[in-house]
Image 1 (tube, one colour):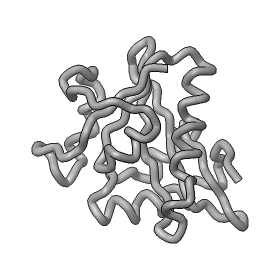
Image 2 (tube, one colour):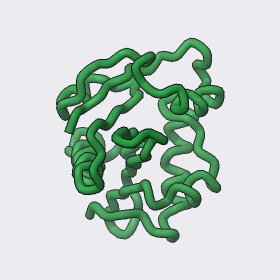
Image 3 (cartoon, rainbow, N blue to C red):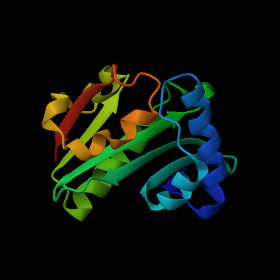
Image 4 (cartoon, rainbow, N blue to C red):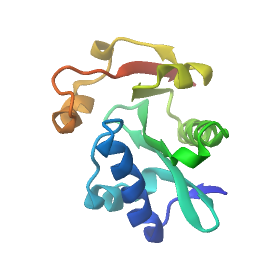
Length: 150
């Protein structure tokens, strides 16, 4: 079931993201970050357990948001759950008047299938790079920037 995250989900979201962060696939997100940004998160649950999450974070820009923290437990890959989560974030972005959504990712082909197009990182606002110092690959960014116009 796909739904907005609730307080009771924060620790499961944290654990899911931490697992991917250990593999170098996502940025580390402290538990307080999850709580502070909980309203950005959508989760997918099965048997009352969080098996996937994704967030839509509005950038300090009038018409731009980022899809981030997309993670699906390994046992549930290739079942369309990630696509459902990203599409839900895109629908939410449309509802609130966001015109463009971007993603920084190690899986560009996944986002291309959802209509995202490659873009230059330099075209994105500098504010988004404030989290880069927490990345294991900083300053040699290995992520691909993609954007979708809604």
